[in-house]
Length: 90
Image (cartoon, rainbow, N blue to C red; front, side):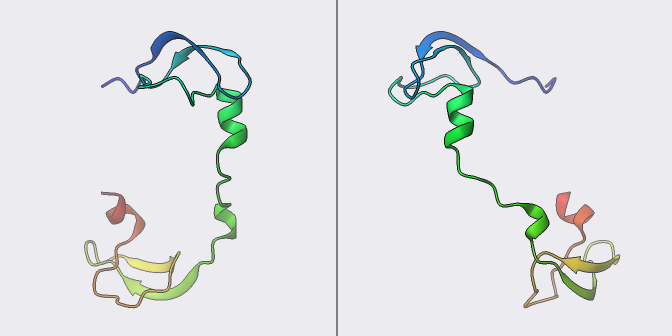
């Protein structure tokens, strides 16, 4: 896979602002609730700012690589299955 998203061509209208939509990253099943990119951005729920996430300091060990873990985005109740960021991603 080359990383490019398949785009679908069509002749649709935004349900919010009536703007013409000619390309979508998915094939719509219906046309009642389609929104243009601008309306979609304005109406989607706001993401929580990651910088506000509370981090917990500690001295834990990764169960996979035995590396040191000093910060977690949660307070662990059980430390028997903690993984460092790299092992968690794998």
